[in-house]
Length: 334
Ligand code: SF4
Image 1 (cartoon, rainbow, N blue to C red):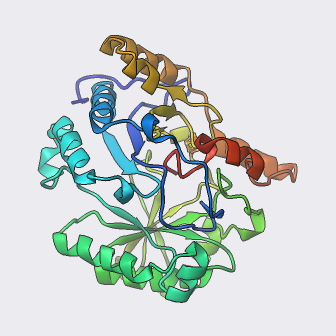
Image 2 (image 1 turned 180 degrees about the vertical axis):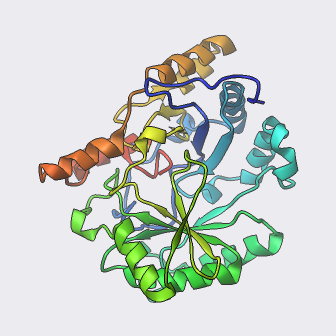
Image 3 (image 1 turned 90 degrees about the horizontal axis):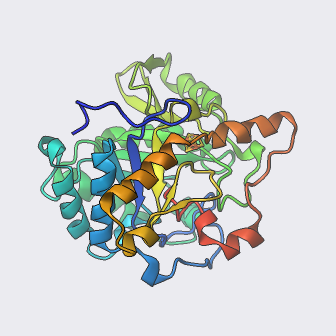
């Protein structure tokens, strides 16, 4: 699909290669680091892209060089008839067919921040821990080989579970990825001292397991990968203390068709409006191409620079977040 052509690149030569596609802004959990409020302003239903509209845009993006499409949310499983969408997208990504399962999905990532039911309840304000574990078990039974477990590590909240989570990952055949707590969107109670850094994670894990070695991996991926002495591989996404903007090939499409070129971007490019106005495919393509070619975003690096001046605090005040759902990480597929 893309092998014959050079990628479309941005101002810093980063390719248009990776699309995170949010299929809903809704979520049934209320995790402290993402959706700490009980009530949110939701995207108007009529604005949500239909499956056909999503498929049209994904087809366009893949034509322009995007190789990886990741479905996300909110909680993507809350979008009704999700398997139908996966099947439609699977047809568009047919070149990767050997790696796809029947419906077209080949990798699943599940968020799992704790193995302790009581802590799960405190962290998410929902009593759904058994369902999450049952879901992981079901994914494993179906035979997905690329199961990943994503854990946002917060100091004083779940930093004592790194070893337990690695051991659980071994049991269910999943690769665990530890993510530093980020100051994006709804992280309204973010402070730097709640960030459990990559260095602290490595130290904690090596105290338990012994020497940890770095695994050389595809340089565009956000997770650095490491190997324990017993061969177990895990990842760390150090977006806060070691941002990787310079290799960032990711953009995000919200469920209502706004295209964001960075997780921290204040503005998105509206693709829904021209799509619904029936503009020609070439015209839509040129909106995407020129958007990407002028991209200069380095959101996480710029946020990190604020630390030097001691001015780093939550990105957006709660009052502003309440007025615009697009500013929320759960809307733009964190
Ligand atoms: Fe990419 Fe923006 Fe994240 Fe940097 S902050 S890695 S540019 S999405």
